[in-house]
Amino acid sequence: MKQSEVKELSIVALNEKLGALQKNYTDLKMAHAITPLENPLQLRSLRRTVARIATELTKRELQ
Image (tube, rainbow, N blue to C red; front, side, top):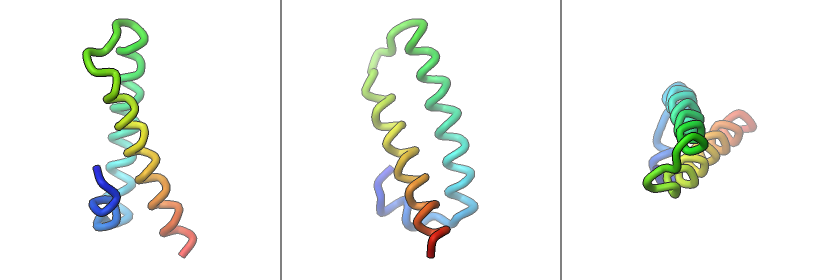
């Protein structure tokens, strides 16, 4: 998810997306610990997307 897409979402949508992505990231991380993922770069992109959304939420709270 690109930063421009994140900026267009509402706060409620961002919170929902953040929860879903964090759960997905945790599941992938656990699966990768047991058996290596076919594409381990998924973890990096998912982690960065979570960070983008969390940053946008923090930015909106401070405004």
